[in-house]
Amino acid sequence: MLWEYLNRYKVFFSLSFCILFSLISIIWQKNPISNSSVYFNKIAEQTNYFFKNIFNFPFLIIERISEYSELKEKYKKSLEEIEKYKLQKEQYEILLKENQKLRQLLEFEPLTNYQEVKAEVLGIRLNSITPRIIINKGKKHGIKPFMPVIAFATDENNNPIRTVVGIIAIVQNTSSIIQPIQHPQMKLGVKIENTNQWAILEGDSFSFNKLKLKYITSSSAKESKYFIDPYIELRNSKVVTSGNDGIFPPNIPVGIIIEKGNIDENNFATAYLKPYIEIDKLEYVMIIQKNPELWSQELTNEIKNELPIPLTTEYIPMELIDNYKNKLENKLNNKTEKENKTNDDTNKNILNQLDNKENTKDNNSNTIKKLINPNDPFQ
Amino acid sequence: MLIEIIVIFVGLIFSYFLKDINFLSLQFEFLKTGSIYPDFLLIFLIYFSLKTNEMWGIWLGFFAGLLEDSTILKFTQQNSEYINLIGIHTLIYPILGFILGKINRYLDIDNIRTIVFVTFLCSLTSRLIIWFIMGIVDEFYQSYAFIAPSIYTSILAPVWFFFLKWIYHKDEL
Image 1 (cartoon, one colour):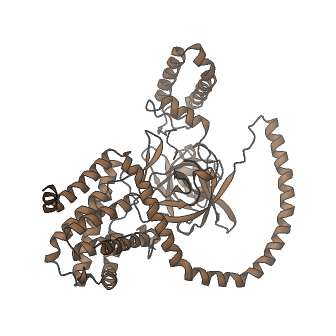
Image 2 (cartoon, rainbow over the protein chains, first blue to last red):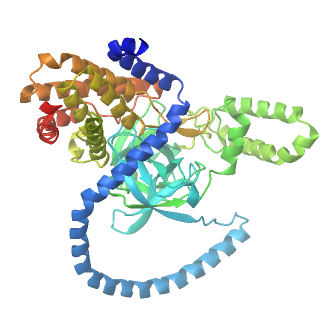
Image 3 (tube, chains in turn cyan, brown):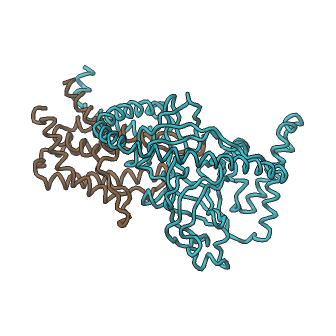
């Protein structure tokens, strides 16, 4: 009876199910079905990988044959280059030691070398509302969310460089999904190498090869020469990671400025950047095994859902800093001595940083400021 | 029946695969159109919805939507993590499949002009609605192109329809 009834109105029930399922999934985004869709996607990806191998097989053979003929010549050149690099390595080690000594004398923190994991790209999805890259390394290989991803590319002078690809977004056992810098939600803290101006790189752009740099900092203020024509200086400038986003180490090349943008309503200059990474041609990437900086995690735990305040950005409105300071002081007062013993140092550091921030801001308190959220790993 | 379903779903996955490897994608820097690509999954859905009925349209739309949605990444501030945003394509595609399945008897699907027009209309409408829902749920992305991919998809649709017809011998289904 019920079966007959269902069968009679099967179209109605099917459509209702689909609509209901979709609406529930949109409203309740972290539902178990959404989570299990990762596995659905994994099956699809593996089927894709299978198709891809079949599809690419004839091309691969042709490519390998043509590569083989060039191999002999490349081998000879490589041997010559290895000799050169041997000499360079010695020089590098001398410089490194010298640098370490100088850092020690200046009481700077020692440079950190992070471990890297090489991964093969299984799929690059650009034809979606949110592009993403799938790689063959996951939890088993020590990959965690928010680890920075880089790859080899060439710069404007055809020199080999390591450049930014994106951030690890979702990690499964043996594979991971990367959010590339071309993802619409991506916001990456960068600086212009020649001028040390800070900026935010946005992924939400009309083209994968032309990304927008927003909030180019104070040097672009009206009295600055850059404001008059920033591109006398800025065009063809190299853009690197600032290291102040808590995710990427500093000074990793991102791209080169190619075009002038407008001055926004807050008097910040904008520009357009061509990333070094050619996302559609990626074959291998390297995951830097670096977790987000401790300060961003501490802050996330401390002020989650309370105040969207970062510590190390110059865009913070003073009233929010005061507000945050008051809250933090109240919290410190309310805590027991035992708790204070463990957390005091961290909180004092935060307060010190805020005080420093306040001092540097005094001279320029009327400038227009923008909020940047430290909890947001894209910044 | 079961074999038919399996064969059609292999076709669905293959269409997704073609989309996934950015097959026949174009990029015209001077036009500022972004990446232009034919939506093979949508063409597949349109073809089977027009050739069969609304029931096929709904379920093919649903699974095509699931495949598409499983690629959407969203960062949630609240939990500081990434999630897959399910529900956007699974809402639009079944409705599209249902409508096409309902109106197929009024359309001459062997006519190239009809194929081009229907595909363009479906592509443009679905993209606009998807962009709008995505904007409500997350944010309005300016990187999502509407017209160029719709035109490209509709131009390739007759060729793909012919190919699908040849593969599936649809009259027997």
